Image 1 (cartoon, one colour):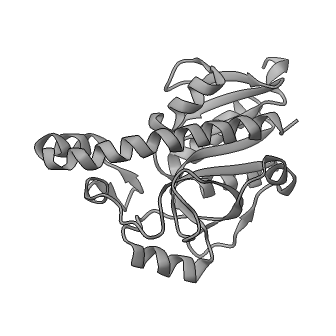
Image 2 (cartoon, rainbow, N blue to C red):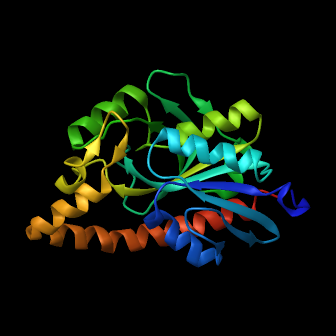
Length: 239
């Protein structure tokens, strides 16, 4: 194991659409699907693209610790807002994460404070909260600010191994917005992941959905820029 990796930050990102702006901003090197590497302000960074869902995120996190000797874990991506004060492209710094009925897992308070920005509880689930009513109910029941599919898995691995962790989620849809039908129609709740190929095939047959896709692509540019800047700050301040 190279000595330079002993204090590296390990970053888990589920989707290439989430990782692309980060890779560009941080000038990461390597092969997508394997490992990407970078250096932010003298802090080494090792990145794994995990795929969607808790099992894949957990596997990627373990590889970062066992194969690359990372000393801390960071997970970053997009998430749905449950807190109505959050806007699209706001980046929430996870103070803790909760999965279903399990107790919350607290992140590194010093690390979260160093990053700055809004903080709050992330709720990781295997089902989509597709409409404002479902989001409002989840917010009232849990107090969570953002919902996602992977953060709890990375936090669990970090807790098992005794290393610091932090989660960053850029808001993709506000608490008052319903998810697009092309997303809800192709989400597998049993596996907690999107059926991406089926979704793209369905979109080819439903051209009236393309304006919705185009709108999401425009907002994704804002989300990506905000997330990339937050990741850069988080890695640099992990010294």
